[in-house]
Image 1 (cartoon, helix red, strand yellow):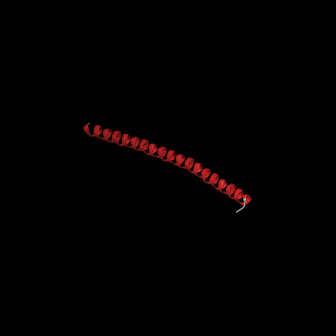
Image 2: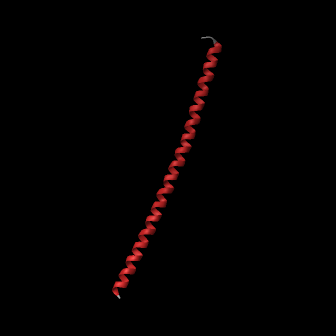
Image 3: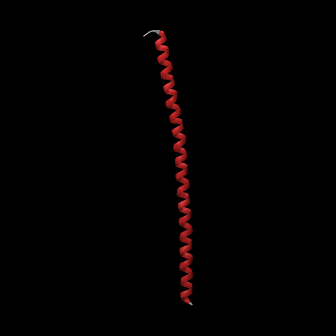
Length: 69
């Protein structure tokens, strides 16, 4: 292998490494955004569950108060 071929091979290897690194960086960003989305989704579900439970407790309390009259 002469010097020109070695240089071309090194350039191609370097480009492949850069592509792999860039893809990994994009994947990390994508994964971070995906985790953030799940955190928002879980917080939204918890918030809705608390509201529904409060509504059920209020309705049960109101029905109990009406039954006491």
